[in-house]
Length: 74
Image (cartoon, rainbow, N blue to C red; front, top):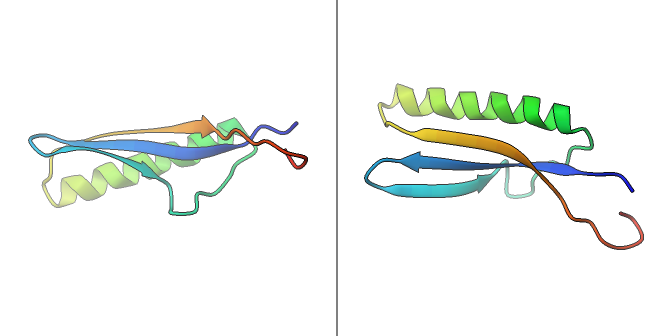
């Protein structure tokens, strides 16, 4: 069975709230955890830079979550 991962994140803006997000509405699936973490870190850094550019204080946490696949193709 091949393990698969997708990028998940959390962005928190003080005095507003925290939002969960996925990389995209249809997340890209990665078969290598290291590759997923590398791309996730880059995505988190890019989002943090964008928030700083518009002067919105935020905390961003991005991680890779294993996708539970069931059935004959998992």
